[in-house]
Length: 382
Image (cartoon, rainbow, N blue to C red; front, side, top):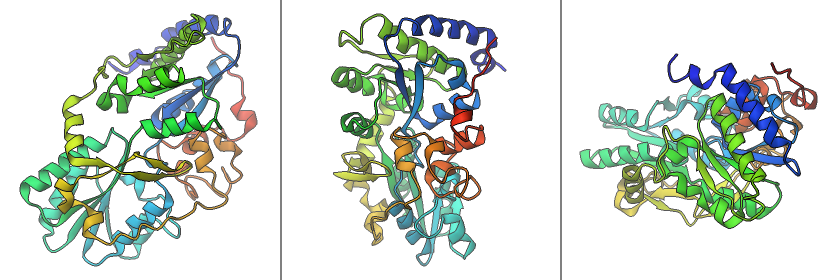
């Protein structure tokens, strides 16, 4: 299939692996590479890339799964909204099974609440038009990748004067959690595989701070196996050339077929108009991070669910057994969580990382990385 098969070509993969082997032999120490985006995690483990790389290169998982980073208190707020009289709550399908402190949106729907999943926030607008006697709320989540579609929806709702529609915004930004992880020092990270989807909106330069302030090289990367392997080779070249040792790490763009240096300027301008940066926002595993969440700007306050409803906003601690926070910050692997694969499975999730299609725990579970032995298994390469 054109535009897919060429990024999964075995001969090209073997050539890249030989190049990676040659570069890895020149390393002076092991390298830990954080893939920020959950889609990269699934590519790595679906295709067994971690088994193909030299032992001195280790992937660790970052806070790039938009569902996974939402704290339990915000889930409970969405559940509260769903229970309100004459409310239709709409959201993406992967939010339906995310557990709150007592139940999920799917369970609330089973007890009579009108909760509907949509493929786009724009799909919520016809629901509002068809139900003028109801309040239609869109439960918005995601990084800069999905924020533009919410912004377009708010713009259209305002243009139509659609008074029975509003958005419960849980959009977050990429830079601040990465700063928190690097600054925190609990996770050793030598380099980053940058999120191609986010970069398509914010641009390559949005990650310059990692190279300029922390001397961590970044390669903005696509989502096919050859994309990831090429990104690893590009990162290794920065280490073996001596650039990183000299304090000259850079941000490179492997995903040039999609991502531009400045990103999508039109989308950025729309986001700047529709959203405001919150003073602080809570993240699962990272706590409260300043200027990391996107609320709705005063200009669009009439379509802000937090202005229209008295949303409780109560902080809820994660279940003691769940270690999603440690997984999201790269402190542990999923199989090191004591409930992984036993009490916590995709059928009976305790934490968000097992629910979301982008979650690291779901990737490990679905692709067989269930314990230390399978995680360290050796794959014979041709």
